[in-house]
Image (cartoon, rainbow, N blue to C red; front, side, top):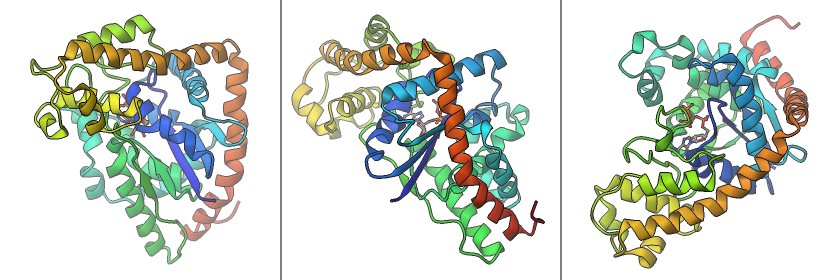
Length: 332
Ligand code: AQP
């Protein structure tokens, strides 16, 4: 059985982008893979997080993942900072990855923005930690949104260079799983910008704990253009906001752009948005309710993350110990 690894940062409330690009695809993979899903708090602190908020967001995210259908008993759901092997292997990878490789990472450029000199060193080496997360488990398949494609290419480069430098066929190749018609959900305010949980505008995203009224209002206000919906996908060219809403609809209705447009082509956005809001409320409403139910017992949620970390450590421990031996470190 192939091993899956994927992670999500507790840097805010998970969004519709996180859900459609990643979490929703994690659920069916549990049927025929060994899945390891991680709340990556070490990644979250690459950008400033209020400490009291971080703990709360971590718990809320874990509850939200379970509410979406992640099975913490049959699979592993855990907190990254409870398994020190991630940071240990990341340090080794900091010494394997080349500066030139990191300089090409577009996520660092996007997140650091114009104030690059003031970005944390952690943000810069974020992809090395991500490579360590996956390779500490010898995971071979990684379901992510499209924004993470470049980081997975880098993880493969790191694995290959490690194997070459230390003369061992030790780390496996990683296959990205970028699934579904909404692998990159865009901001509701700007169709050229990714929907993000840390965007300063709450109107730019749908949060997985939004009420029905909030969802309906955000969709009603979502930026669009004055033209009606086209009859075919080619008509979405140069219309990023329209394409985004059609992509979201397609993902929720389990169809594709052509399927949505064959049904809604020619309609104005007001009618389309009403249908879309209805679909969103039907999907997110039950997730928000179940998350709330789970959060009524915070000790249980924390226990899941701790218990998962013990099980994760039993897998990562021997793999990282072997990586250290290959590097030439003395055994403990
Ligand atoms: N807009 C998106 N569309 C599709 N997939 C997305 N993902 C994130 N945003 C979108 C996918 O969600 C998974 C978890 O992401 P993450 O939390 O680890 O980091 P991120 O990609 O940086 O997500 P955010 O929401 O933008 O967080 P912040 O604002 O903290 O940076 C990944 O598989 C990602 O591809």
